[in-house]
Amino acid sequence: MRHVSKIGVLLFAVAALATAIAAGCASAPLRTEASTSGIRAAEEVGAAEVPRASLHLQLAKEELEHAKGLNTKGEEEMAASMLMRAEADAELAVALSHGDAERLEADEAMARVRQLRQDNP
Image (cartoon, rainbow, N blue to C red; front, side, top):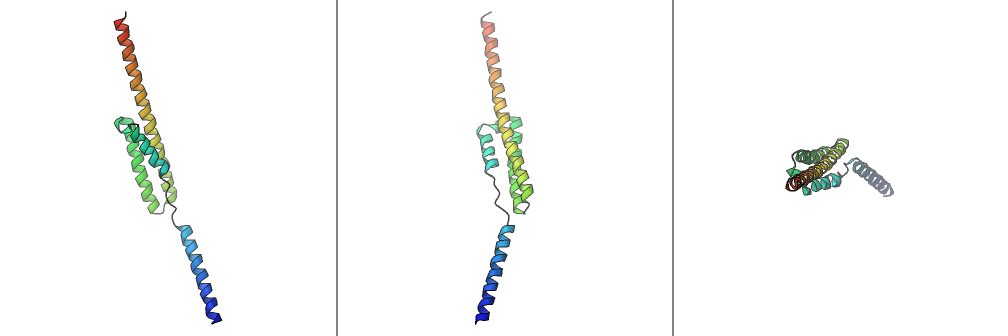
């Protein structure tokens, strides 16, 4: 009986070790918070309405989905790289949206200045 319990303990230890190794090799969850929040921020500032910003917003969305697919296939490094691209494109979309808004504001200010000059020679 004593012999059987030693074998049982040994089998249990081997099974536990195999489980630990398998868990270590399993793909880590993909951290998409930064790219997802970047995409949401771009949408909130109206990037979809600015042609150049819209392009980068769309790229960010596609890159995020591609990263998820890569991670599912176990290609964590490529997935992480694709996530960085998605985050960068989302940030660029936000910046282009702000730039467009500032340009429009400057154009409106110049139009007011021209009108004031015409009204007050």
